[in-house]
Amino acid sequence: MTKNLTPTAALSATGVSIWLDDLSRERINSGGLQKLIAEKNVVGITTNPTIFASALAQGEAYDAQVAELAAVGTNVSDAVFEITTDDVAAASDIFRAVYDATNGADGRVSIEVEPGLAHDATGTFEEAKRLWAKVNRPNAMIKIPATIAGLEAITNTIGEGISVNVTLIFSLERYREVVNAYLSGLEKAKAAGHELAGIHSVASFFVSRVDTEINTRLDAIGTEEAIALKSKAGVANAQLAYEVFQQVFATERASVLLAAGANRQRPLWASTGVKDPNLPDTLYVTQLAVNDVVNTMPEKTLDATFDHGVVTGDAVTGSYAAANAVLDAVDALGISYDEVTALLEREGVEKFVTSWNELLDTVSAALESAAKSTVAAE
Image 1 (cartoon, helix red, strand yellow):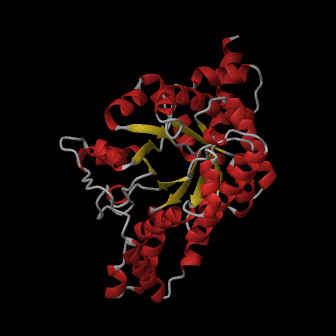
Image 2 (spheres, helix red, strand yellow; image 1 turned 45 degrees about the vertical axis):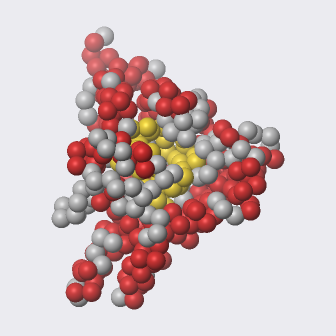
Image 3 (cartoon, one colour; image 1 turned 90 degrees about the vertical axis):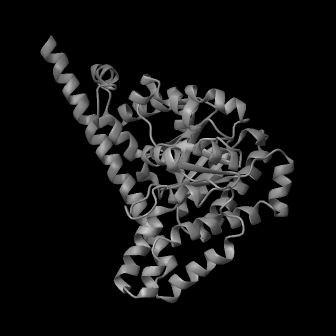
């Protein structure tokens, strides 16, 4: 590892693309995003309903647009669509130089389809096309959850030449299905005459939520053996996902597409903020450092990594036997991997629906307030 690099620069040198898991208009307007690009090696952004709900609930950055939307009688769903796509378009412009410099691999800004459509393949596909057209930036990415219905939507969206960030992946089996959906989409895009080199995708594998759920079950067992396994399954699961990534993109099917100009769908480590204060706050960064992945971090994790992260190079390749041993040991204690990952997917969708409803409530209240202010002023 090159000496005198900051930890985030060292992480980037290992082959990890650092994306920030946060966006707000205040960040856009203040120059904060440019500063993160320049100083902390941030090369992309991910968003979700929770992030937008938080951004809309704070500060005054959205007041002018909300007032304009209220003045023309915009309904709340359309207002959310306008506000969030404007933020993503503006952030995409800020990251455009990164996008150009990396031939489209980075400089990406993700926006999620409405989570209430998570089990509606057709609705998700239509919304993905609508978001893509509205943002109208080549470096946008449409986030689609890895539900059963989502898999079909992923294939169809990729088939249209639209770049996709697949979210809410918890199990290795579902991850294999996600990669298959991506390859099927590329085959569809190729048949339709789309330029494969312009289509990019990441597969967001959630890390800390796996540990949180399994840790609860290990605590309930309470034996010395169980306690010794705490906070190990999340990293092990992600390490094995990387093994799947290596295996799948070495197959003949993938090789044919890559030879035609397609890009590999990179694993993305999501949910990388540490939930247990007793753990190192950079755990899900340093232990998952490896070439050709993305790590999307909340700002707190990014700051911790920049401040004191210890990056020693590839921490994943060669870990597979030990990672399998961890999951086998958890299984041997009677904790069902399939049950845990199915629960986490279900809860993940539910949490995003809740956040989406909070976002609608926040914007609805803001529109109502703006409308009353206009009436009062008259």
